[in-house]
Amino acid sequence: MWGQSIAPTHGWRESCLGATRLPRANALQELLEIFPEDRQSMLKVAGEHGNWREVLALHLQSVDDMPAEERGESYCNTARALVGAQHWQHALRLIGDFRERASPALFWSGEGDRSVCQLLLSIHSRWGSWKEIMEVLQEAQLYPDAVTSEDRSCAMQAFTKLGSWQRALQVMADKRAAIECDKEMYIVGMNAWVSGYHWRKVFDMLQQMEQENLILDEQVYGSALAACYSVANGDSLEAASAAKATSLLLRDMRQRELGVTRRQWDMAIMANARAGDPEDALRLLLEVRDQEPEKGREPAESSFEHFSRSCMRAFRRAGHWRNTLVLLKEMPPDTKSFEEALKACAENGKWQWTMELMQQMQELFLPVEQTTYASLIIAYSAAKQWRPALWTLDVAERGGRVAEVGLQTVSLYNKVITAFVKEAAWRKAMWLLHDMPERQVQPDVVTYGAVSCVCNRARQYLYALQLHEDMVRKDIDPDISSFKTAVAACRGKMKLLLQAAPAESRRQKLL
Image (cartoon, rainbow, N blue to C red; front, side, top):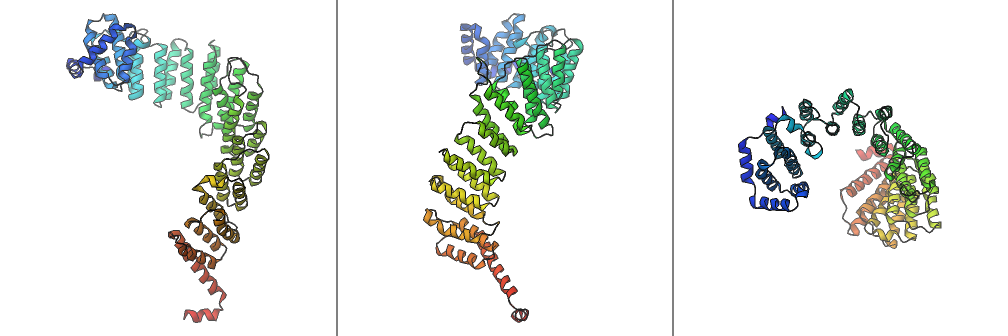
């Protein structure tokens, strides 16, 4: 069994006592004598500060003089302090020492902080394995009332944490075979089912609790909603169904007149915005806005803006740009809301909507952040949409916002120029290159390389070669990419010359 491998010997006690700092242990003893009611708190603090030697020395010096009925509490308090100091091996040896000195009935007795069973389960759930947890349960069950419902819940949590959710449910089934389970075990059981991706079992457990006349309060529904939200927030195929379940649970809570926290509203809204029905997310948002503030209840009416911005971000990532625009109309006009709508339209290729939103912001005198201009230009450039990219750059310049970007200014121009590659708009690229110094922006090697690529795409090879010469003349060191572009221009020009020459002339040149 587990105790045989960790049970200490007498030499262990002597070595631990000799390795500790006795003066500091005596100082801790004096504090405990002055404040006897704070013994457990002081041991906990000492353990959290890493003073495990003093804690262990104090225990070994005083445990033999304690009455038998108080030793269990002392052993548990000291072991918990050692666990707080991350010395769980010493805690297990200390528990083994208690096992050697106490009868089995005394060893397994105790509840709450005096529960050896609960302490062992918490240690093995963090540093052990499910087999060791199972051994503790099997041995403790040999003694009446040794394993409480709280201990079983602790074991179920440990099994779930270690990935053995089936064993957690088996512990619950064994409990139900003897007597009815309490509310805490049902909550832990819900988490176990969700850990195994069987989130629909949550509703079965709610029904079983109602059949057993257990009160379905805020804690139970909150745990069920959080369990479904964890599935809806993932990438599984069940995400959409789990998101719908969060709406159903929230509706049941309101029908039962249970208090709904701000976090629970947020989970239901975000789950549907990301993976579920976006219309359902909008409906929940409007309910938040329309409900009257109630004393002591959350969310208040002011939470609508917070939820709306989070929901807009979720709509944007999920590609629901239309719902973003619908939500924008329901919100008070502000810069952050418009920026989320702008990004949603830009990332989904709705260029006309982005321009219209920008015009609306100008009409409302709403300031546009410099990062928003940069994000829009990058999105347009990635889609090779040079017209909206150039228009956005022009709007930013007229608003005096490009100068605020600092070192990113040249980068924004380079992004716009790369958008010309798709349609081979070499004239626009050349015009923008020559116009940059007038806008107090100096082209760099990336700028010249981007314009050269546009010229090559349009078969304007002489311009590409001329740009390479301009770089050298202006003391801009060409990089490897620039040389590759120049070589490609030479190859393209040679190919055009060979294609234009008559066949006989080509043969003579080859000879």
